[in-house]
Image 1 (cartoon, helix red, strand yellow):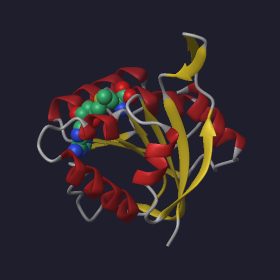
Image 2 (cartoon, protein in one colour):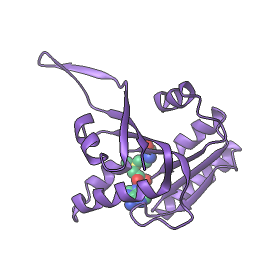
Image 3 (spheres, protein in one colour):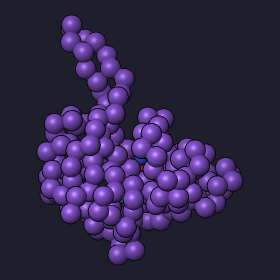
Length: 173
Ligand SMILES: C[S@@+](CC[C@H](N)C(=O)[O-])C[C@H]1O[C@@H](n2cnc3c(N)ncnc32)[C@H](O)[C@@H]1O
């Protein structure tokens, strides 16, 4: 989370930019973004109890301006559009593990994202399943790779690797 927020700050993404957290879970990323000064924050999750939990957490944190709604990112409502920044931490991974035609669901995710993010907008994805090369291939239609964010590395058998990939893409028309 810290690295994502640092990247947004380094790029001087305005604090009032519309930011969408896809598959927000308990909404903790948006809480941290709000504490860093971001004011136009929305979280979506297809799980009603996740949305209810997030709402109760932001209420307790005194951050009621963070919006949450139930949405299936594979079939988003029309009102979900025009975001300047979309963030995914673990949701594309979860969709990728769906036993029912995951390849088709990944394609649908890319299509939905392209619709939701405005042209020129940034997409920040953190994955524990996919390498940089694999993600770059998944998001090659309608997006350009911008950069890889540093993640912790480990050494095993004389080789160095990372268990997490964090990438930034930009929406192209
Ligand atoms: C691994 S959790 C990550 C939660 C959160 N982003 C985090 O970093 O803690 C994946 C989340 O994606 C949500 N999710 C999975 N498929 C979804 C879909 N099609 N539409 C919306 N949310 C989805 C799940 O309900 C879950 O909250």
